[in-house]
Amino acid sequence: RATHTTKRMTSKVEFLPARLAIGTYEHTVSGLELEENKNIEEEKNDMKIAKLFRIEAHLSAVTSLASSPSSHLVASGSSDETIRLFDIAQLKDFSALYGHTGEITCLEFFGEGYLLSGSGDGTIIIWSGNPTWEEAGKIAAHKGGVLSLSIHPTGKLALSVGKDGYLKLWNLMTCSLAHKIKLRHVSTQVKWSYDGNSYYVVSQKEIKVYDSHGDLMSNLTLGSKILAIVPLGSTGQRLAVGCENGAVTVWNSDGTLQFQMEGHKRRVRALTMVRRNKESASTVLVSGSSDGQIIVWNTKTGKVITKASGYGRITCISSSLECSVQQSLHGSKKKTRKNVSRKNEKKIQMNTDSQVKSGLIKRKEKLHVNESISKKKKRKKLAKVGAKS
Figure 1 (cartoon, rainbow, N blue to C red):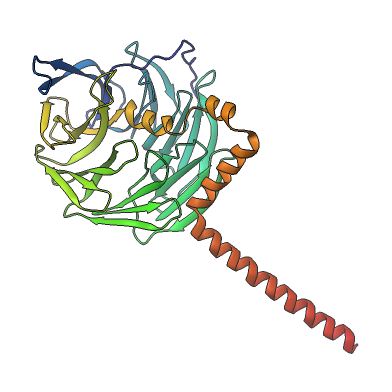
Figure 2 (figure 1 turned 120 degrees about the horizontal axis):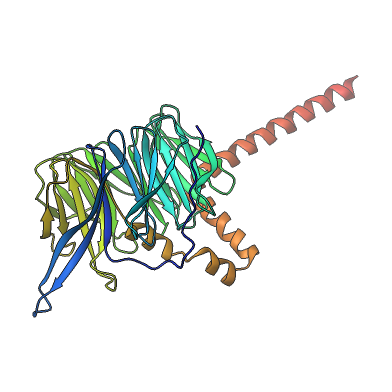
């Protein structure tokens, strides 16, 4: 299929108020905005959900969503094999991307000009929006299909999991495989922490948290199938989890349960973190369920702030905050080039890469040692034969 390209916005990017997008089984994508009403007493803050737009974006169910850091762009993927791009600032649909031959299973922005998509056809496509949205690279990633992907905050690496049971680390600079690990169970989700020092691997009812060296930090086992996760806080000190039984739970970094939040009647398919307003650093948790409800939670108390219904069977939610928090911790590309020399930048990249795959590096070094020993033995043998002759 030919890729349809559309010009990207070139105007100065300004961050929008607390906006998010939701996708449904009914083929629709809706744009929402959280509005905060401050009462006379400062401790009491009331929020409401305002609908910005609703559009039948696809021919079948919406399976994935992603928002850019500024919240200007929203990408939606579907089982109809297409990706749609929306300008949520101007409230319009402005592009469609064609390149996959299977269901779009995952999407993630890096900055305002790059988008990664994973599909049931087993490929990951890197889309570039500079100056027009088009395919910049394609990776044959997983046999049977890509289930989830996550971009490292530096934008140089990405993790992916697929139906083949592998966890793979990709070098996005060269579109090549850096390393792969065969998991004991097929993982349905993988996610970097916001600071890039750890990552989460989800399979069925279990979440494993690894540090950047690949060492297991904690292991959570829940009583219901895990459908959605989102780190809370700038470094992901806590983790919110949405389950098939309708529960939303918040866990501490040591693996202890902080609280369980009840509100949904059916499975929780999506979670995201949103700022209370444009100026505030305070955040709230938003959950979406197959029961058609959106609930905004206070992450400090676990109580419901506000809720809304009538959106259909929700499959996915996205907001700009997750992307912007992650990438702001590592700074923009311009800042990196300005403040860090190329030599140091290369060193940082090598260190980040090596930390994530250290376990595999040890295996490779062992393999190289064994190979070199066998070569020396072979040379000695040949020397002896030559001496005898």
